[in-house]
Length: 268
Image 1 (cartoon, helix red, strand yellow):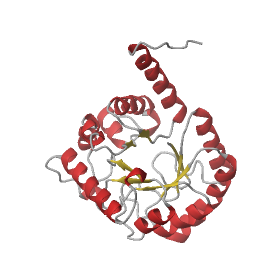
Image 2 (cartoon, rainbow, N blue to C red):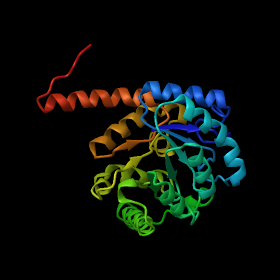
Image 3 (cartoon, rainbow, N blue to C red):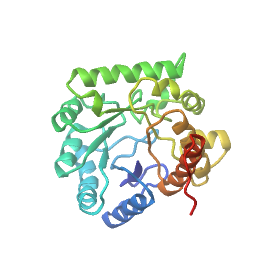
């Protein structure tokens, strides 16, 4: 899943792809690099961000989504926590919803997802981006994140959303310290064991910076390492900024895996 932020203030690429032409060109590059899904967001969810109203989010998203539907051949995901935004983007032709609030911010989101019968990513977060880093009190972060995710999944399924449409995301960096994020990544198999496809979004995040002392521009290689670890632990979807490098690394991993099972690896 390639990240396409059409925002002025996202932590890594804010402002880079704010215009329709720049956003569409970046999406095309990610698809060429191997992206299976493009995830478009119009509201930053970085720690401390206050959010924007629905109309501003739609204003940012709509022209980009309209262009992407015409010009790229992979599904378009909408990164939003607002039911009205989700509905309007699905009406334009978007294919899935990625809700960082785990369907908890807007009670209408479950109805929208059910009505359109689209895949939905249920992410774990406590509070909102504005105050989420005040909610990092866990006895066992992995066990509690897993339970809270399953609670949100239960709400979704009780509302009529098909189990087959649900993915879960532990929310790396969302209401977690760097150490807690690392603990979740180390124990990802406890989340993949739920049977729900797990999406992992480690791309250039602050836990890498805090551990290795690196700024966002220097975090590519640690992101790739985290992605490989995630796949080995059973993660099904990786949400990243740098699609090409991650895909190439995973293709190498697939080659080793195929050979270890007695298959042949094509060398060009």
